[in-house]
Length: 134
Image (tube, rainbow, N blue to C red; front, top):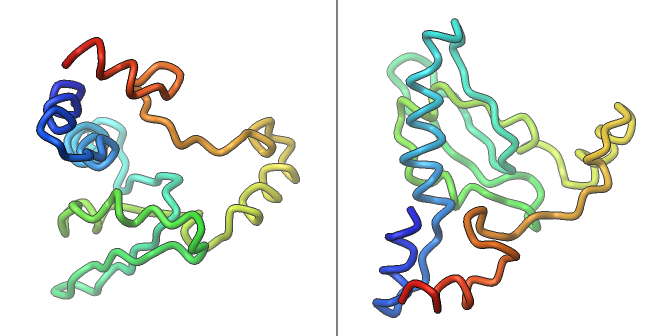
């Protein structure tokens, strides 16, 4: 992921490593682990929705109901197998509603600031990160 991120910037493009991570690392690894976990579904905290089709019908990925937090764009590459095993419980809620539920449950993350950084870029300073690699 890191090498591709650097190469894309060096080529004058703006990559989104979260999309590639979701496709190649998170969902592939989680799907492979389902049998060992005796699980049928993957649940994530992405702000998006999945409509599961009946047998023979397609599953559909939809935007989350909170337009300010929609994350369907980082899941666009998921295929029918992945979508069929995916549950997105916060996609039907706004960020404020999720924070309220977290507060009601006494979870520390209820007041956690939103994260927009790239996980492998220290301090979210991608310019400094790239300077050391290009």
